[in-house]
Length: 94
Image 1 (tube, rainbow, N blue to C red):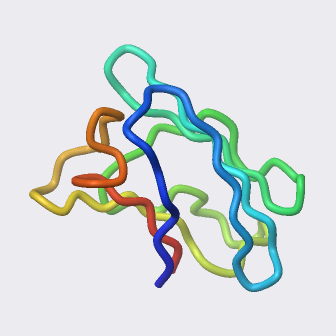
Image 2: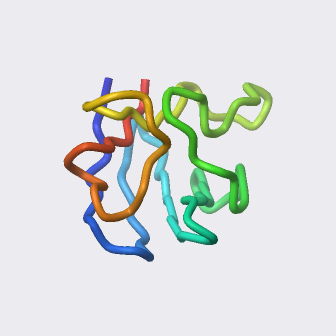
């Protein structure tokens, strides 16, 4: 399992390399919820998908991502909110 570092800011973009694949993740809040766009090696896998606690973010294996991305709430079972990204809410690749 690998944790992707996030900051508690409303709009952010981060990139990390895992198993030789460059993952780029953009997060934006909308109407009190957090949405993600994920690219692998510059190919968009998902665009503005709702981020939910414990649910796979990419979901479809055919999209070419060997593992899966999950948001984890370390203090309960709430969906992620930007003010506590990187502390209470963690993004992990497994």
